[in-house]
Length: 559
Image (cartoon, rainbow, N blue to C red; front, top):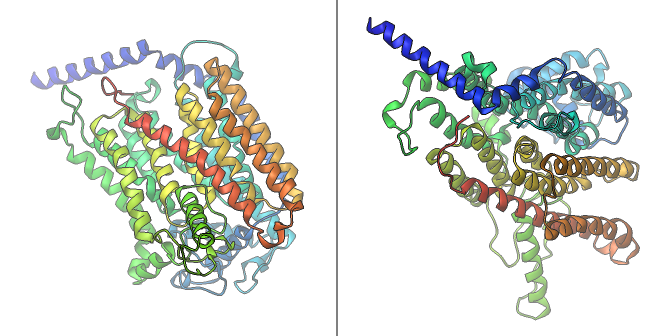
């Protein structure tokens, strides 16, 4: 009898929860976004951008093209035991094992295009068939990204309003993600597989956002496990995502493993579910064991880790990513020049940090920064954000905000950060931008500045019209669509003035400076100017977003 009463109470709780979902309007939102009629536009949007990617096949490609060709050759031609030892090319395999297996799988398709690309000694090999295959491999694997975008759009909250498709949040989000300027130029011109990787990230995020949705109610706890599995796979494809692992760990522990809260919103320690904790841990451990297990068995784990975490490349990349270290470097340079002019400093060796090379260097006046110092700065900056979602959980959207903050922390304070890493924050922030007016403003600042900072990746004159046209179209759409969605301007006068300054910076660097005599003696000044100016905008966006996650709320929010 007692068992029957427990079952009945459980059923009543489920009914009450369904009624809350229905009364919140979330059911109407999700179901409206899921009908066949409302999604008939999505394939056209995805096919359109795929067609544009095909038009870029013969565009300029960077050294990353040769990097991935070499990895195809290594994984296809050599036994597994030699993958992380091979060093014929300077572009050694330095991604986790799952990505190596991904390249191995691609290599078996590549052999049908041109077998010569799979010869390790064919350094710099780029036949037309090789170019075609590698370009098509990026376009094909973007299917993961397209599916993830659709799942994110299905998770978007919206209030009843205009029936115009073009101003619906899920349509705007689809356009912002599928036609993202950064992904287009980084993956399909410069050459990388960010769309594939970010697709797994967004799909993982979508699974957590879908917890509590009416259409996923019977399977909602499984969504958490699915999201954890996808993120574990992502970590074993590219280890840069370790920086956002704290957000995942704290969120899943707090919202999945602990099943109840106290009346004041604090965690009820006695509610820890060992079954859920073991299930979560088993998923993560299993994926890591599958990835690293063979190399551990061969006694090669230290060799693999030495490839994954090289610290001989210097604090900054050849082109400084627009972060705190770019500002730190320019302050050090200014102080050294000023000190020499005022004869306050003895003669100093010429700073190599402005020489356009990837190498270690010492600062002239300010203390030099070590890898351990950047790690400490990154962890310290991440800590308040993850503690905030532990003390005051705000559901999956609070987790997503924390994830973006962690991504920006790693970008701002990390060691040898690439400018392309800004996409790790811009893409997930797009989801928040279509639901919140404040987040939309932050997105416009970060996306515009971050995307412009990618300009130096495409330095050839042939690609100039393409990159200018694409960024103008994407930025114009971002501003107009979000303005219509939130019915008003999203940026203040100072913010707009700063963004207009990007145009002035580009004109000065690309039109005026080449006419000056300093062009020959100081060729990297334009890169420095772009990096430093963009650093200001990225830093401002970082601070605004951080303050938003630390802002107290009246009560914990649940989804």
